[in-house]
Figure 1 (tube, rainbow, N blue to C red):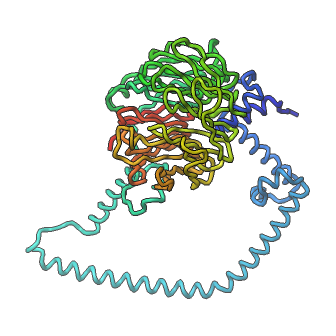
Figure 2: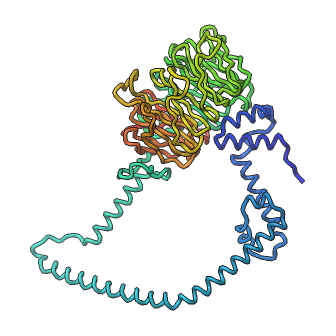
Figure 3: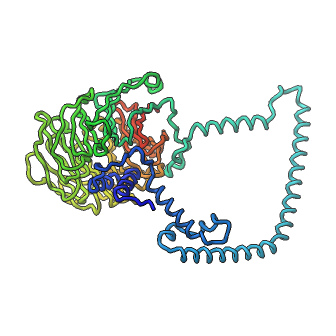
Length: 564
């Protein structure tokens, strides 16, 4: 009998976690189980392998339970069993369940038959009455039409001939059906809010989309250069790529010629090493340098041409988050090794390591050029400063892992989101949270501030916080009041990424349901949508706000033109 080794089972569980979007759990398992040392070729393992295995096991148990059954229709027998029954009960108990449920079903059918025979005559009589009524109406309509035609015949010389009203109606219907087809996408239904709105979301046509192919595994992260036409992407294939995207619409230049791309290899050998997944990346403010963080614990800095400038070694575990400060002289990294490190870019050396968390660091974010915040699976948030040996502020209040933190545009408020299904807003002026945002029903994966309000390019617009959750919704919050503005309900699966357009008027969202939606922030409704062929891990806008990139689980990056 063939048996499965623990290393193979670990790998299948690792892949399942990865594919289901449980990134942190996958990394933790991979790290502890030494998946990177595994000899299994990941390219040979099909997606959903673990689920397929479990389903096959259930089928086997079903067959075993039915092997001594004399009944020919085994499919019907299966329908009496729940997956949990198959796993928790032995063959004898399963036989018993099937037998009991069959007997009950036969009793029900017998009862139904008796009931049907009694009501048959009554129904028959009603049916006859209905048919007679129908015939009467039909004749009446026919008579009306004849009278109408006669009337039209009389006035024929006075009037120009016109089309048969029935034909006109049919043509009208056809046109409206076609319009509806163009207006909708196979993806999300229009959201529950704004039911008064008549406009359906508009599918972005394929002529406005460029598909960038080259990665050989899921693409986890993407970011536009603040300088313009370069788009960076990071993948599970141990590479990052820098794509040169033309300024014109996707339909013209890019569709015709191949897109110029630089491949940033995170491995030395020929084969892709699973331990070098590119987990995070960030451009410096000038768009001249790209930093990447990898599963191997190394941070790397590359120039615009994709050449390695420096490799930064000190972390002892995968890097989950990486951010440049505004000035561009420091790079900040957060790792599974529980620490955050500030790197001095001039020297290429680490300047300070911060060891305050008791569990993996999940996210880091600069407040200004020398101060930053970190969050962790230990439920804590620390505000730190270069040169200081203790946190300048400690925020505790979350009851679950803190997945992401973001400072508002002025650096005065910090937003956080957690597995406890809440987002919180903190102020440096107090120790407890300012607002506790509690409308989500599942884990919140990410948050984003709008580029609006004081200190931004859009000072007259209201500052808004967006939160994206595994409950398939995005919530928009009024930060001043700590109240819900809109619940954006258009996705069918966890939402992994949200990004505001540079003018703050639109929000793009990407979900595991393979759809990217673009929402009007003011109206809280979908204005554009695009359906791809894989779950979406990240979405981002270029600085002009006329192009959106999305990276997918089926190894591609899509660039879309956006115009309203």
